[in-house]
Image 1 (cartoon, each protein chain N blue to C red):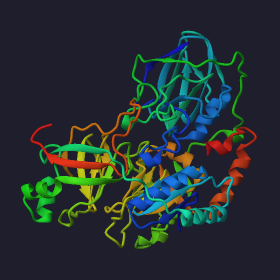
Image 2: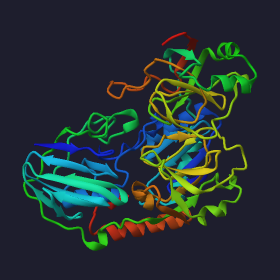
Image 3: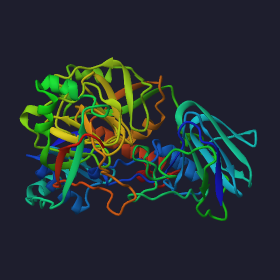
Image 4: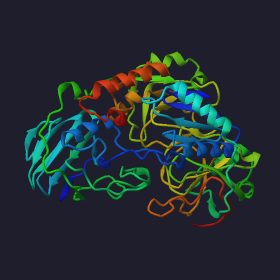
Length: 205
Length: 313
């Protein structure tokens, strides 16, 4: 358990599935203002005006210990056609150069079936793990101020889908026309942690 | 009952209660960037702290009223005119149908808050009416107000007292700010973290409701500056690989992979809404315990004028 600020406590966990399960369990207790999963951690925000840090840490430790549930794998499958490279995948050339492969080799390795690790960052942004080890690349040294909606990036062994336009720090390798978030729909989020996604290459959107 | 936007200005949005409890879906809080100033404006027209009001940015906003009502302007220092005559900020203004209120450009601070008795009607998305511009939802059609927009007013109470914010509760706007902050567990990734609290930063021009760029000092992280994406919150200061620090604000993404080197204490988060490009900023080091103690003291200070202060800051 670590402090990341006066009203924040971070707990390390083994993997994204454990993080999702713990965060969901903590939200169910109603004891925390927020309980948010990361890739290998969960951070809670609590009301420091009504609870001491010590009490919050004790309560959290008890809940962490008691949390053994695993989230049920969602049966949802979503196909995501990607147009690789070009105007909306401007980093594909340098990514391929850095990884030492051709764009065709990259696309062949990237297409396939994955599981969504988590949502986060901005509404509808999906972190999708399980990339081939040969596609491991860092974030950009400085984030871009503007990334168009539908952009597909990779970083740290994951694919990231940008549902909305905004700033972003992942090298962009393509884009999709799939609408991943609709604020006015009954169920605004198309993807969720555990959803299966299938990437395929298309020539046009 | 309507309100016509004569001039929308640079970025005027409707903000209400923060969209709390949705960060696990990638949905940030939004709400007023300076919730204390918005609460002070609402207080003057008899509204609860987070009744939907207008947040104007730098250039101000001009409004024409479709009915008799009461309004108040707080936040950034800005010249306000009612039908061409100067009127005070921090005071209840009685306005008549067809009156025009012009909130001028901010000369100190960034954001002006205009509260109208009863509040504004706005789109409720994911349990809040606060505008979140990156995803274009909430507020008025999910966007900043444009010249000619017509807004609907919620029902006002029949009687509104004419008030002035007492001097001791008028929030000072500064050119040199200090905010209290504490180390985060990743701070020790910095080459010399003690410099964080010795540095005098300048607020960068790349500053908005998403975040605030700090210029003047850069830091080096001992690792590559990359980590698995982790939950982040307003007030967290990140250090991307280029070494310049970035404070996350109310509209910032909910997870991020840059090292989290410090966090501005809860009690000073409202200041983020008024940090103007070019202003200076110093971080005052506080332990978590001291930051909590000072929050309780700040609540006690504001409580006589804003009874709901614990919800506000």
